[in-house]
Picture 1 (cartoon, helix red, strand yellow):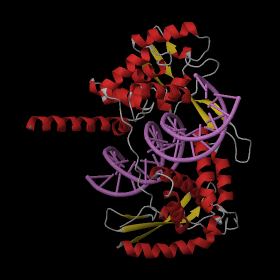
Picture 2: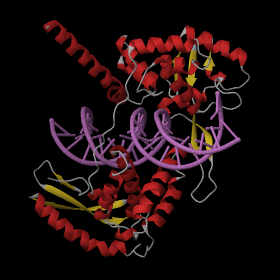
Picture 3: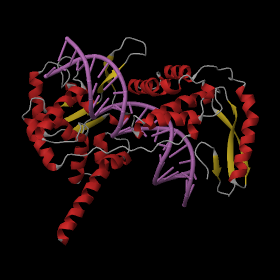
Picture 4: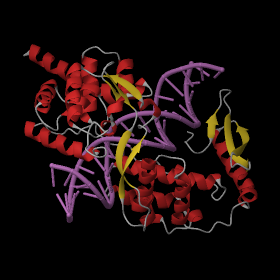
Length: 369
DNA sequence: TCTGCTAACATATACACAGG
DNA sequence: CCTGTGTATATGTTAGCAGA
């Protein structure tokens, strides 16, 4: 009955509660007004009334904004830049300039309607996957939410539009055979060490690139994950284009972690250390680019005849092997640097279980025949 | 007041094409 | 063989709702 964004809720006592924005404090936070009725529809009706009642008062604050969506979006971006990581900012910027501004950027901010957004979705569906469209809409939603907070808009039209459901496909793990082939091959390949490292530690590609010798403790045989490398487009629109290698803290605070290394990896690392002068484990002057690791990975993979895997699959493979060997989920989660085991379970373990289920089905079939 | 769950928010990796 | 650019999509964390 009640939909998200409506601010109508069923209460424990059986009544329906509706909220409307009565006022805003100086810092922009909302002060709600409340109404109660016996039925959902009664609340909905009265809510429209209350909203229109308070509309003028609080709109007079900022109703003089006359910019279009694009102008607002650019302003919002410049604010958001301070608050998020560079990779996030560039991703937001790309979505706005690439998909949102060309379609609806010229519409007056205050005129943007749910219908406009629905049209945008239809337009995007022709070229993008649903999960990408979701991300784009999310950015738009957040952007317009800020306009609401600042009192320019009364409500956020994005909330009236239902998001397309995601259709993401899962990354698969390597099978045991594939993995052992890859291990053997990588051991004898000059560019194979990052692959071995990923298989044995579950590190992300950016974390491998960021490794410095000072992060490895050869006495305790542990490795300290404390930075990541990415290449990001750092230019602003209309500026001269330039991408840059960016060194940052890992994906999240939880990603800062200490991981034990096996003896075979230790030996390989020590051997490499003798040969290089760089402070980075991989890469000659600065850190190696993630893409270069991918490049070699793809090459090796195709020589071995392994298909539909990407470098990140090694992380999945690591998790799967740990699970098969009886490592607890909590430990796996910690090694991967996850904040909670939920993600570990959803992203990495479920695929394993479904593979297992398939295997059992096969066995079952064999027995019956 | 607690808690499990999902959607929203945030940040990473993947992949394609061009060129030195 | 490696680097630049451009863009799509997967992974990871947190906020907040609904149910108890």
